[in-house]
Image 1: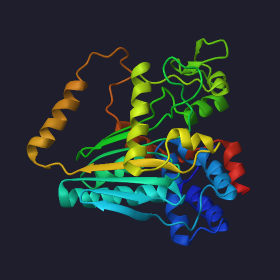
Image 2: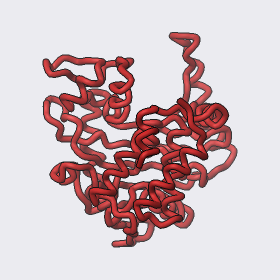
Image 3: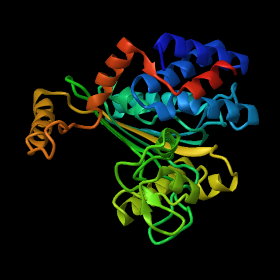
Image 4: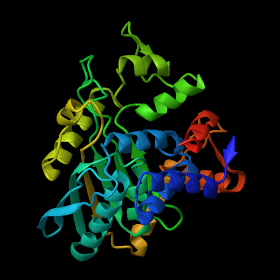
Length: 329
């Protein structure tokens, strides 16, 4: 089943207005959810929208909450999100980081008591569109065992790194688990096996069965012990810089809200030499001999614009059951 971008955005906005979001907030949130699906990140577009609605109804997300500045130290600012919509808080923080980078060459904004930002890459693209290098990350509820452990004590803590480029920005958007929890749920719903092992089953065996992994919550960290260490460090940085809740404290609440996030922007020189360096790196990467001629080497973010154009032309593929659930809200 396929739905137009305009129809999807309109349905999201209708539901949000019924949840007492101000019109300008409903418009922006609906656009972000619809654009996530438009760009091919279905797990944090339509598929995530019913969860967002449920969190609003349970009081974890407060529609009329506004973020506020807590501290300003030159190129570094600290904000409090007041449990408002995570994507609006994140967009504001990245905008502040961009403005600080324009003034100081670098800007860093950390925010506490905020909510799920949905697709983290949104804010990497935001920075790159402004001509800035962007780095941002968030902690999450515990859903990843530390290396050597069997119980979740770390978050899959997404990390985004974006570099502006005239021919198409380079944007890495990754969780520190081999597969995000949303991606596992997608494979489970579709009844498909993962392309690579993504975690452990009840017997402690590595598996490609997404259902087994979501049942045990034993996701596999990227790079094994290295991913485990990276998750810990991102949680430390997000919590210390924002003076907000750590993964341990978020997990005490039994629901993922009130998380901590960091947004960093760096203003590059933007000269011809910089552009040549970027192209040199990308071109050299793509000279590797291919294992499969039908599967080309791609830089992070390369397929996003192609997916977007295809979905604008043909419609956004949706899960019929989830779409009908949204229509009924």
